[in-house]
Amino acid sequence: MFKRFHDTEKWNKPWYRKLLPVEKCAWDFITSMCDNVGVWIPDYETVEFFIGESVNWDNFLDKINGNIKVMDNGKWWIVDFCAFQYGVLSKNCKPHISYMKLLQSHGLDEFIPCEDFGVSNKAIRGKISDNTKSVIFNRDKGECQYCGKILDKTTARYDHFIPVAKGGTTEYSNLVLACTHCNSIKSDFTKDEFVARHPEYKESVQRVYDFIYTLLNNSYTSQDKDKDKDKDKDKDKEVVDGITITTFTKEQESILERNFK
Ligand SMILES: [Zn+2]
Image 1 (cartoon, protein in one colour):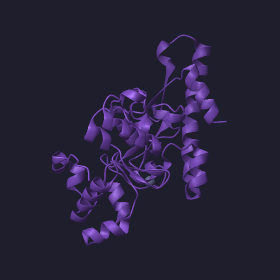
Image 2: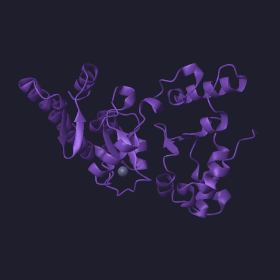
Image 3: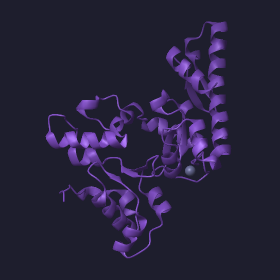
Image 4: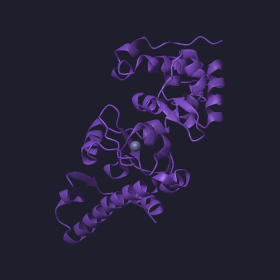
């Protein structure tokens, strides 16, 4: 049995305080029973057997503040587990090599900052500023754009509609508000991949697509206008519904063309 660090600060974290006692037990169980890189194969019956009470797992995931990502294969991953237990992984440290191999076997190595994989990991590339979050939250009226759930700022997630891994940007025009559940299952899928796996989301995904497409079109229109006028430098930004949309670089344009054919 391995020894693990235990987060003594969790009692100061608002999301942890808001958990019901049974949910706190569930969190402790999962952080104890996951593998060495924080991956856990959901086994609800066993957790409930040991805790002695049933858990509302949908509520649990919503309240867990994005600390758990539901992977495509249904396994759960404690996102900060490696960073918390080991810091930055190094290939010069023997145990770290086994963790790196385990991460690779889960297909998770891109998410982890470690020497071996460089710093160009998804987590860093997709980082969203607080200011952007605030604008998106207001633009989307605090509602999950996929299921309509009303969110508060602590539970809101920000979905890269075109995944960062597939060239999506961290611009207003590629971000939509989502609840933890929808954000987890949307994961790194494109629109079509997501709908193929979750047909029940077909309508809402199309709605988001149309909305984003409008934002992008408006941005293109503003660029065209600028070319015609060719005078005011500040006109490379257009305000749509109170949101400033920056014009795109050639590289971004080709990514958008590929994703919006
Ligand atoms: Zn949702």
